[in-house]
Image (cartoon, rainbow, N blue to C red; front, top):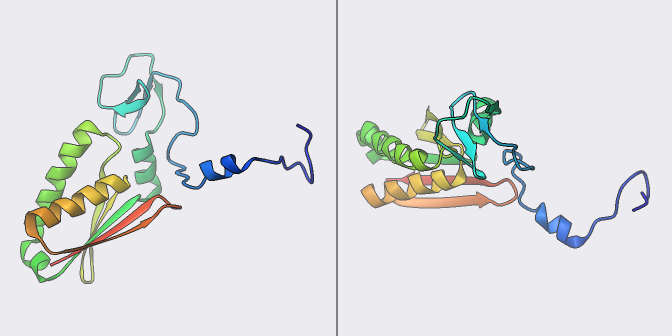
Length: 164
């Protein structure tokens, strides 16, 4: 196809729609296997990241979760607030860490990045929006309270707020 106006190529509408949700941390290409993350040890195998032993010939390439952690660019935020949190902080964070361990065992890209005390509560950041949602829902199942979600489809970012 011949270039028009300054080297830009015309594209179809369906190509525009494919880019509506863009996650720069997902590989835009299929990774040539075997691949092992040098930071966490996860292995890219059969089209997904898993916890496995990498073959000796595995190439080193950072997984999306480790890239997010290195860049300090979370996909999920879970904000915890309220008097109940202040009284049961350690118990609540223990529940969240246990839930993360269970999820991460099966899905290596779902991890808690940081737990930071804020002025009126705690903010937990995650490498995956699904993990943020799951953590917030686990809190509500265990302790009730009010739960609010705000999802930005364009940014692939979830903000959950739990209050009790």
